[in-house]
Figure 1: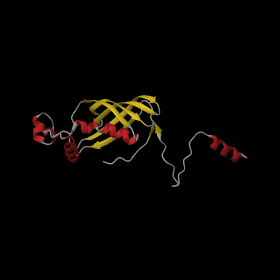
Figure 2 (figure 1 turned 30 degrees about the horizontal axis):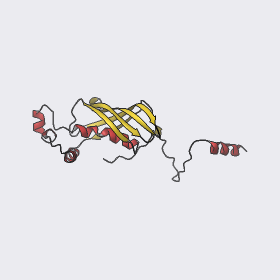
Figure 3 (figure 1 turned 60 degrees about the vertical axis):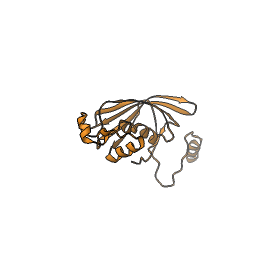
Figure 4 (figure 1 turned 45 degrees about the horizontal axis):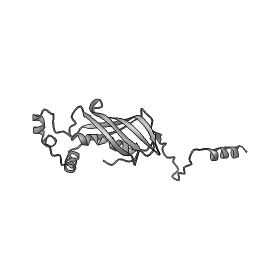
Length: 171
């Protein structure tokens, strides 16, 4: 009798049932809330700068000539600012496949050099439901050396849902 009551309560529950044949439970998906922060780290390489330059047709010598960059007041060659800022849509799309990136404002605070490890983060500051999707405003920031702010701004994205996934990201 006790087992029947337990089964009845599980069947009548509104929690969706999932089957897992591998023997291990899938990781729980977190629901995005205002204040939540998502992060990814990336080290920008010479190859990244070269490939971005080919795609963007930005061949500014600040990105390719160390002496030119030093004469302009920098320590070494710069990573394209927009390449660094590309961390933001990457973070959002890797957690919310199907997200539509609507807008982005950027403020460049400090240079990023080839070889720098940069932590990109997006923090949900406003979530609004619109039909069957969610319009989310994010505070966007990149740091190097764990504390130096190199980019900040805001982004807006339309998310298909608020259940964050962790999708394998290919570098």
